Length: 579
Image (cartoon, rainbow, N blue to C red):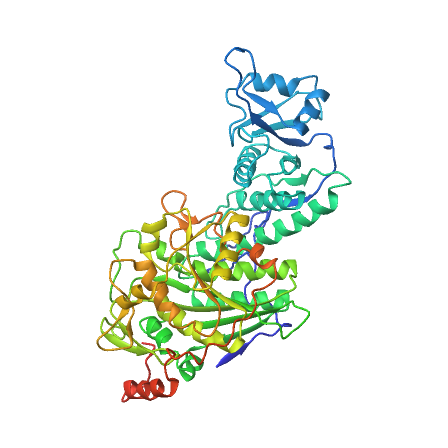
C-alpha cells in the first residue's frame, strides 16, 4: 500500500514528557520510548543591541599579537574593536587581564572574569588567532569555545559580539548565521534514552548589532536557527538506537514533518515496492522482521509549481550487520549510523521548509535493516532492479547501493533538475579521505562545482573523486549485468560507478559521507558539522534540467529485463519475504 499523510491528524510521535515535581504514591512504568526527534531544547538566539544589559555576560574577541623582539613588555594579544570599547569603559580592565595570560589570542582560548561589583558584567574574552580578520573556520572554533566557557557560568542573557568579527568575503548576515548555527550545535545534548538528564545552563544569546546592521544580522539569525534545528533533527535520528529508529520510525518522522510544514508525504510499503519491481531494495530487507519503506517527502516552494525539483536521496539502513557477509562484532554498534544519509536529507528538508526557500525539493529515503537470517540474501544471488538491470550480489555487506539504485530509478518520474544522493556508502572512502572531506562523485562539471562551493560555504567540505569508465570494468559479472562490488581497489569509486548506471536520465551527484557522518570513540555520535547538502547550496538558482537521456544507446531494454525478472521469480512467492 501507499500511505498518504493527513495534515490534520495528530502527531504519531509523542513529545518527550517533562519531569513531574512532587512525590507520587504509585509509580507507573514508563513507556518504552516517547521521543520526537528534533524536538529538544534549542539555544535561544535573537537580535541584540549595541550595548549589553546590566548583569549580562559579554563575549568579545581578541587577536593574537606577535611582539617585536625588541619589546619584552608587549602584550601577547590585542583587543578587537568591540573589546576596546569595553576596555575603555572599565578603565583598562580587559587589557590588564590579557597581560596575565599567555597566548590569550590563540584560537579558542578563553579568559573569564568580572569586576565583582553588584550587577557587573561578566566578560568572556575569546581568541580569534593571529589575523586582523578571522576565517570562517576560526570564527566557528571561537564560537564553540565561547559556548564551552559559558556552560560553566550561571546567568541569563549573553551579549554575543563575535559576530561582529567578519571573515574576509563574508557579510554581517553570513557571520551571524554561522555563529547562530554553531551556538545551537555546541549546546546539543542527546539524553533521550537516559533516566537522568544532563542539564546545562540555558542562556539567551543576543547577537550584537547596530541600526545599520540589524536587518542583515536578523536574517542571518533566521538562517542559522533553521540550519541548527535541521542539524538537531539529523543528529537525533543518528543517535537513536536501532531498536527505536527503525524504517517505520523514519516514516513516522517524515509524516510528522509533513503535518508541521505542510509537505506532501508518500510512504511506499513492501507490496507497493514489489509491484514497482524494486527487487534490489527488497533483497536487502529479506532477513529482517522490520518492514522496509520508501519515504517520499515533497516541498513545493517555487512560484511555478511545475519547476523541476532538486531531489535528495538519503541511504536509510537503520542497522547494518553486513547480512550473511557478517561484519566483525567490535564496533558493530556504530552501524546504527548507517542511516545518516537519510537523517541528513530529512534535516536539510526541514531547514528548507523553515526558511521557506523559493524552490521545489523532493526527499526520497529508501530504508531497511540488513540482517542475517535463513531467508536473507546470499553471496552469489542474482536480483533484478527496478531499472530492469540484474545484479549479482557478491557481498551482502555492500547493501547501500542495492537500495539506492532502485530509489535512483524511481526518481526519474519527477523529471528532476538534479539528483543528489547522500550515503554512508564505503569504508574505502574513509581510507581515502579520512574524517576531513566527504567524497563527491558526479559526471556533470557544473553540478560538482556547485556542491564543492556549497561545502566551502557551509564548512562541510567535499573532495571530488573520479568516475572513469575504466573503473566500471571492475563490476563485470559472469552471471548478471553487473556485480555489486568491484574488488578491493578503488572501492568508493566502483560503488559510485555502480550508482551511475542508474542515473542516465538526469544530472546526478553522489556524496559518500562514510568518513564524515559520525565520530567514534569517546565523542561517539553524528559529527557536529556533518550536514551534507546544506541549505546554503539551495540559496542559489536550482541547476537547469538536462536534456532527456532516456534514449541513450547504453540504456538497457526495460521490457527485456522485466521478462528476465519474471523468469528469476518463477516458483517463488517474492524476492522479499518476512520470516
